[in-house]
Image (cartoon, rainbow, N blue to C red; front, side, top):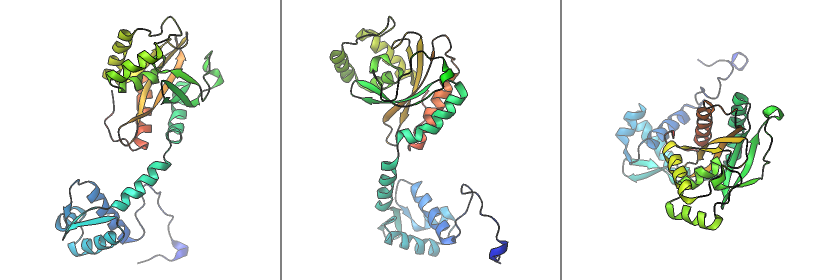
Length: 269
């Protein structure tokens, strides 16, 4: 029995709402089942997985085939269609690391009250592309958005170097000479290799007053849907004020941003 328009209940929140058109809900269920199976599926198995009668599933699948959402491999056998890939590529092209990171960065800043940085690699340097901080943070040096720093002197830069193979790291060492900026800077190849080995094992990186005296950082990587390291999230603090329990918060925030970019991997420890 349908309600008249004046007595219609408010729509439920989008996260719990069911499609108003039943056939769309069934189509979504069919697509979900096909997405969960890497191999083409037979009609009877699709019907069983969705709870739909085979004739109903067959009728909807035929329409999805027409729309290239589903591909018919053989008679009665189906898999996801190429149109979904086209749509996915359009969505991916719109995804911005900065846009995905800004909300989580602000939340991390509220939790720690310390500057939070988003950086990407450009050649032999990292570039700061976003920063969340307050004037009360107590930091003596504020690195502006667009600022640059050598990879081996920064926590995020070490993440990128740790993702390189030995030949690429050696080439970086030869190009840069591992110039230092403080007494704590890593300037020897063997010292850098030990540090990168630790980063690979730990899954996070640190800057122990290596770029600026009095400032320490901790960083975790941000990964895209292909599992590639595309950015790094770091938290900076006065050297005597850095709290170790912030590390997990940094890692969880980086994981959250990665997930929004489509990364499906396990959390890196």
